[in-house]
Length: 184
Image 1 (cartoon, one colour):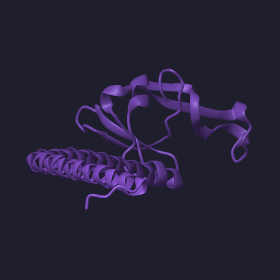
Image 2 (cartoon, one colour):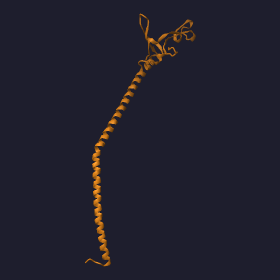
Image 3 (tube, one colour):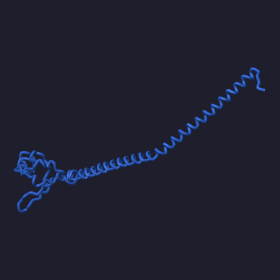
Image 4 (spheres, helix red, strand yellow):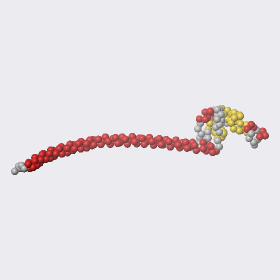
């Protein structure tokens, strides 16, 4: 139990120095199912602050009520530990394994996203480079097309000029013929 009153579980294992009695660490347990899911908490000996009667879990039953459970005849006690123990992370358990797996997946996804971004940047550079390579050829094509259009326009204009001269001559001949005049 923490000094602040939070229950951390039952004491499972205590490691200590046989010659001095100094506690190195203690491990909590909360039942096989909880331990399998959540893991066990190992608390450093430096967090142990002492033992307190009257709080915590039932230690022994006293007197004539042995075998029964009236609360007033149950002796309670708890190893008191620093509130810092609340910040400790349990070892083992399915939840810890799932958390690690989740972290690995998240990290791989982040790496994949980074690689995709790098790939997009490289592709953009390649496309930009290809566009730069294509510009001179495209400019030559545009210049040649412009020259061909100009040339064609000139030729059409020249032909139109000849045709309009021909029409003028035709009209003149037509007018003469309709008046009954003739060049012969």
